[in-house]
Image (cartoon, rainbow, N blue to C red; front, top):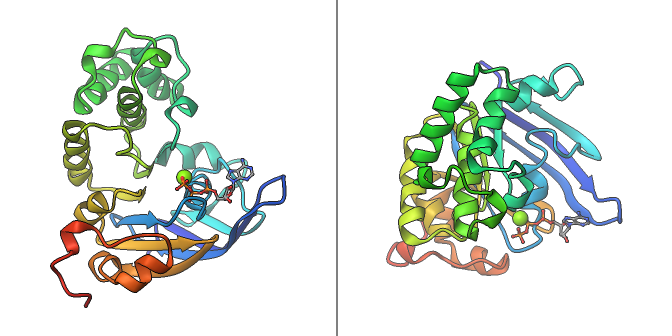
Length: 247
Ligand SMILES: Nc1ncnc2c1ncn2[C@@H]1O[C@H](COP(=O)(O)OP(=O)(O)OP(=O)(O)O)[C@@H](O)[C@H]1O
Ligand SMILES: [Mg+2]
């Protein structure tokens, strides 16, 4: 059997101030799977996602991507294959113009300038933000920044797409465009979100985190329609599952 795309074993992470954000998290995600990470504020979702491209390294435990551990030699290669959209777009956007920001990633990977430009234009077009290409990113609205941050990662053509709250600040049209875009993306996807309706549409599997621990991992419809489970972990059953029975 081939290696899982993502293999996390007993990962613990403590921030420098002593906050224990992850307390022993283990799961595997196969090639092409689409998995949601849900949980209340502070559950550890963002901390977990930042381990998937080596932005954070576990205090204890093991993170493997495509069977590879994060060694000094492998980290560049892993970052090429795993694209992470951070929760805060300001962590992602730093160039003078939107276009420069989206082209930066491919250029940095050694893609020739004409091809990087083509990818940047196509990615901006896919998120509906092509008209903003000459604008400074820090002067955009929250939703525009979100969409541009997503474009910066699409331009890298990653094998694994990791997104932290991708729909927050998007208007209904932008959110719908995002859902349709992600539905066409056939590679592995991991999405942390409070938008449980988006989760139901895009991810057949969900992992529920609470207090840095996995409290459930299984089929989305079953877990999210389990009202006691949802309420116990600061969540609620999404409206689109209201009429369905929990099994
Ligand atoms: N830089 C940091 N330094 C110290 N503690 C942190 C830091 N970032 C997050 N934490 C803490 O780690 C825990 C997990 O935070 P994390 O951001 O992973 O939660 P989350 O599930 O993404 O929450 P949200 O739904 O609000 O985005 C929380 O207790 C939080 O206060
Ligand atoms: Mg978060």
